[in-house]
Image 1 (cartoon, rainbow, N blue to C red):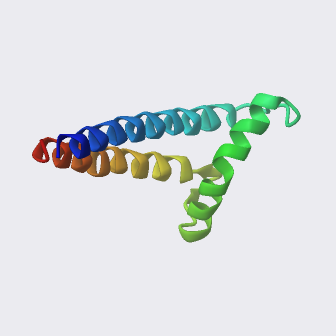
Image 2: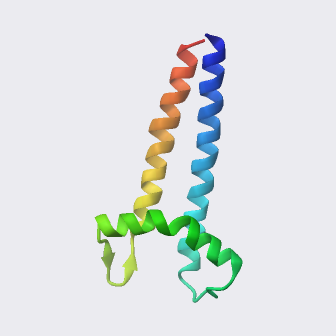
Length: 99
């Protein structure tokens, strides 16, 4: 059973790393939106391509644009934080119990 526990611990670590990485991508997208970025820059294109599908869904479900400020990145970051605490924490607890 220790193999299953180690697998869950590794899965939790990788998931935590991926969620943290996406968290930073959302932060970079929000910061870059404060300036007028070149839409043909490869970094800007990557940030928009990586974040727009999720941000668009949040904007469509919850129109939270108050005074020209888009709060969808804040909602997505809160969701990612929730997943890090709930899902990763649950996987780690399950891995500890299966040892």
